[in-house]
Image (cartoon, rainbow, N blue to C red; front, side):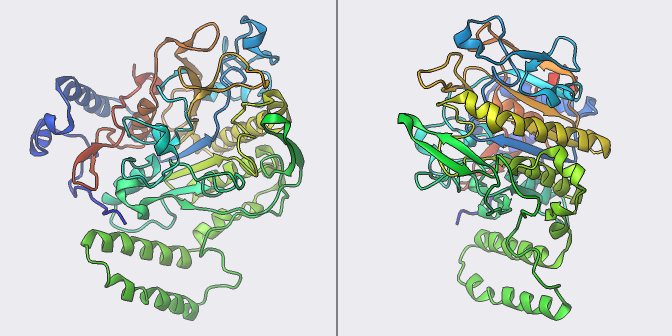
Length: 498
């Protein structure tokens, strides 16, 4: 187990020049004067922008495999057919902002959303770990090694860790939760768990707390892979039963927990002390004790069990999100933040076979029409409308973000391949200025034309909106201070301060 290392000093409010000197000088991080002035700029924004800390929670939507920018938020109707594809653009509630015709319900909520059309980075890989952590460089080898010591901690783990330093009592609901299951764990025999949502040098006690969902879907769809292989699969992302349930280990016991049973469970946990005594490092003990505290908290509090019970929602509400695994996971996300969760991640993951969902190398339009765009359309619009109607949108940051985009042109298998030179994401609520388009891609949707934005910039901005200085430092396993958003800088355009 990696040591949980970190300064007890509260850095969230910003660093002074003295703080830098006490950490050993700018050279310790390989930083120079530009970095120092950028930090000063960040501190100035913290004091002058009401957006700092506006978000009390964040729901991060991660469509693994990566949606095509052309068929979502950046259509190119004037490009050649091999670029624009067969989908047409439609108008939205924002004058001049068109999106793909496959997203008619999302078009009606775009006045509450900001689109960034100029996302860019150098790694056209399934680099979830790169786009959701401060890690500066990435390689294909790191992609399949989630516990490699070179990784940096996932954004949700950082939020959990820093929030814990500033709170004296444990939360009734875990701060960092992911649904519906461990990413890449249901992609079939050939699947390997990919890097990304892990706490890295903060220690595995800060990994997201996972829900589980092991029921099959109710709708059979055709999944196609290269070389003509076809598979008919009851995919829950295409449709689930209204009785299908989310679970979490140790939560929602079949019989009520009486005081005696609770005490019995506590005594079982106390038996772990025999193991605890074998841990010879104080930081390892701290990490172990955090597991223990969380386990008892989940057993003793009904709040998380109630949040998992999406069946308690009215049928009309559930249907507004779509009766699919992604739709109901988004509804679960709203319920979890409403119950007190700080950072909730919702995956749209591969199911049964690799490269058969958002990783659209083959037969893209069949997938988009069949279940991808309809499922996204209902879930995202349903979440935005629901949060808004409940008065929660202003304090809940919603981010739709993937690893990369797709190629400007179709390949020979009627699909689009990996492309990271430009792609689109969407953000709403939690201090985001609504109804904006930030950045621009070129005429083919293949390169940034204006305002390049790095995934690290998005991380920095998410931290800022959650009330965390994006240049806060945490120590790695060697005691070196690392900036939580890496080289990311605030994008003031997102919250109207630019």
